Image (cartoon, rainbow, N blue to C red; front, side, top):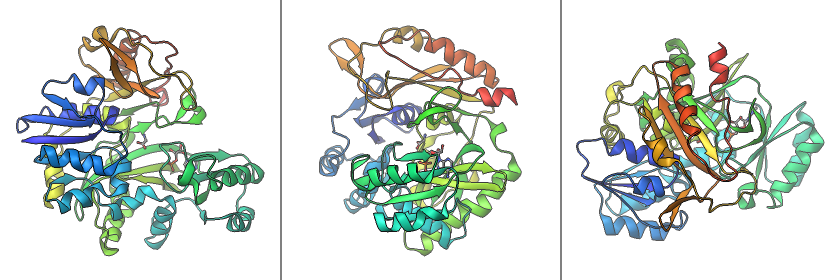
Length: 425
Ligand code: AMP
Ligand code: GLY
């Protein structure tokens, strides 16, 4: 079968790599892809700006794939699944209505209130008047979130009401994250460990993926600005079977049933971002797709055919048997451009990739990479995701970091403490 993968980040490189392992797949197209994706055997990349829906629909119509897998949130929020379904194509991912769970944080919060799903206290503020009215109800640190999609940059933690007010006004004015900030959500600050819990859904049934933990802050020791994610690891130790059952019963199944009841049936990957607090797990956010960089670590552990799982979601027959996992932990260390997540330069030549690719048990997933003549150069903030699987987390981390050290480009930065908290336990 022919498969089209939409996207061009580290998450999509991992998807393409895993899909290519399916004996059922003869050809993979990826749009726009990146230098690493194009180098995978049997994969053809097609240029696309990552934004224009009509161009994307044209690309899919030309290829007529047997299966389309959508990686990023933007096309999902634009309704790519609805449009492709209308054209008779088989697509893995949620519809526009279902993707609202990620595309509008206000929608997600009100949905959680309607369905009694545990989440931080909040206020949705579409303008300055509502912001002024809401602020006195918050104490201590306040989390300010842009309602819309902001590529991981729409959340700021303020230390006081004054600071929260300044940030929220900046967002509302459109200066900070453009139209994504046309409405803001204020949220109570929660303390605890974060957990990314993902499930596959067909609108009714769910199958959990192995848990992962992201490292959102740019700096070591969880300091500095929030990013799209600087590294992730996946080990079974992150979530015991009782807690997994609790999450399925009190969060995941009510979300899937609630979306169906609200005529927004949820098919695809549901990503639940959690804070494990003293008063129990609380939902921080939903994403309507795989995590990035969590996916790189999670798919390193997947031993069954991912294409079968995608088809189970499309055909309404998701069951616990859809995934078979390795017990071995996996880790992904993100290598980013200097300056990320604020301004950074691109076009830096990357060296050492051939040596890194040759390390057994390690896979270097590309994110922001492209070609200039024969060179591979940086094209984005997050450049590579060096991913390793080992008998222990320690072993996986050692393999990943030894491989990172083989790679060089001007200004490159990475966190040296991915998974460090888990090792201390
Ligand atoms: P979100 O996109 O809503 O998941 O927010 C991005 C990141 O901001 C999360 O992964 C957390 O690290 C942090 N964050 C979001 N909401 C809260 C909260 N209520 N309390 C503490 N940290 C939060
Ligand atoms: N790593 C967080 C995300 O994918 O949104």
